[in-house]
Amino acid sequence: MPATIFVPSQTAVQASTTANTATVELVGWGLAGAFVRTWALGMQRRPLLERPYLHLVFAAGAAGIGYFVSQYEKTQLAALEVQRDKLTRRRMMRLQQTEAA
Image (cartoon, rainbow, N blue to C red):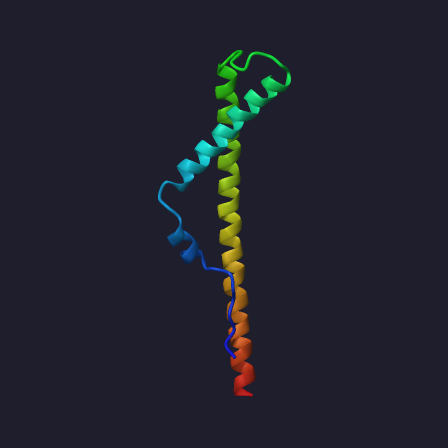
């Protein structure tokens, strides 16, 4: 019985993503930051566009956090891919040894 892993490989994940995924992701994080600022002002019952430059600061801060999270996720996925390859090789060697014996 061949050893299979039900998790998609890194090449399959890369093939399913579009070229502008990072841009869309950063814009999403930035919009989330601006939304948080607007929501906080709304909860305080202050004018929503009071000091609008702070909306930009919050958007930039959230985009920075989003970029960090994205890079961290990429490095973790790469490390998991290496570990998965090691485990797959070990399993295949073990299966070959048991079939040869």
